[in-house]
Image (cartoon, rainbow, N blue to C red; front, top):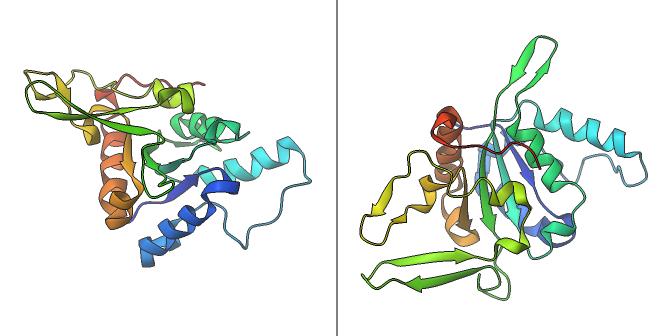
Length: 202
């Protein structure tokens, strides 16, 4: 089932990936609620007007896709957008619930080494580590927050990326191969949010 989605991204470096995601969604892209090339230009408007427009786009969505790009933290809006999507917002006696969130790592210079590294554990398991200083606290604080933790290997205590964190990291190539799969995983986590110790503020 298609979900109403919002894509949070730094325009100057992730617009192409935003467009690639919408293309891969195919007919389901009609459920996308975020900005497109046809959206009004808000460059010269007030901060409050920009926030109002963003809130209107995000309010009815159930899944947020955040693109992890090298300079994501220089965006004025992404951490605020994530905070809004994680909160329960009431308008005219109707409440929008916490969005599921999936973080898509942008490929840079043909790979993901700018943000992700693979580590071989002594027992043979391969685990991933990430450059957490490059992303917002609201992302880091919603990583590895599953309660209770479910280990994929009891020996080295490694976990499964898709379920161990409320905000999971997915490589661009993997996500684009089957975006609906990861959107559904994020939505399922929002339906079972009590299984996670959520941080909803920046």
